[in-house]
Image (cartoon, rainbow, N blue to C red; front, side, top):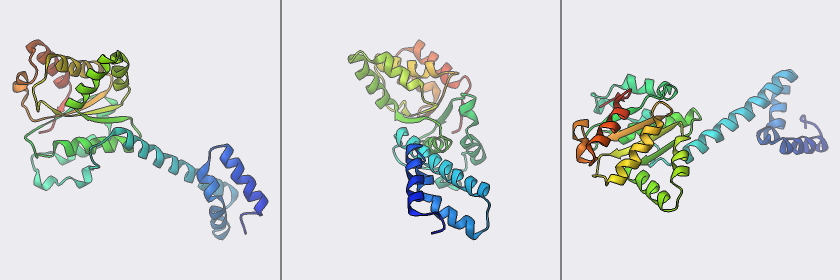
Length: 237
């Protein structure tokens, strides 16, 4: 074996385990044999080992971010048929997928009728953000409100709100699909207002902004919410 004797191999694996370098521990022999075959020097071999470890760690990080995001299903921008939706600017969506809007904490609003691809596009931007190793969470407006109502009942409201602030990106689906009670509207406003200019939010809605008063019973709260959402948002509908 060109990778060294069994004692040396066992020692390398033990060191890798202690240092938490599982990929190097699994691949050092194979990569050593490739280095000998291709006549690569020790530095090239070391670079290949470290690159393999970094690549695997990044893959695990992305997988963990996708799991934590709680996406309803995996949908990517590559799967979206822009030919069937010519009103949606494909180039602008691909630009958004690069993630600059997250760094600028700019909200994004997808407004349109049911079946126009709003949830798909919001999910696709979440997937793109996860691939950039950002912390993401996808939820519906109703589920978010229910979680906050339960948190208040358990005296955990502040802690729960703080947790929602820690995400780099929140996708809030189905805003405006059902009328909200006063407390639900207030909780939704709290999350959106506290994230304004600090972290990014994506919203999908089937209601024109002029009709949001049908959903948010307090006109003053509705106006304040719209101000937070549209101040620097990019509407793509």
